[in-house]
Length: 78
Image 1 (tube, rainbow, N blue to C red):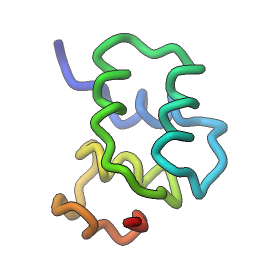
Image 2 (spheres, rainbow, N blue to C red):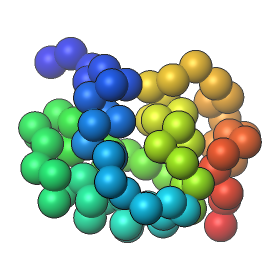
Image 3 (cartoon, rainbow, N blue to C red):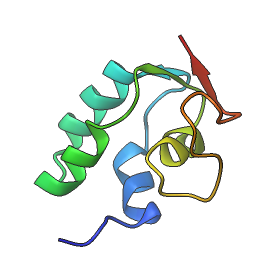
């Protein structure tokens, strides 16, 4: 199974209000109804609050950027 594109991931997140906690992201994703692989990818998100779609995509490793937990400038660790 190939990794979902950043464009698809952003489409799944469209309409989500930010900042959003992990549980809010997951509820939104489940409501969208993505395929099993995309849903599994989102369920790997670290527990924190995200300030933008870019912050979620960076945390998923879908965009270039810092990879260490808590080092993303858009993600606010709890």
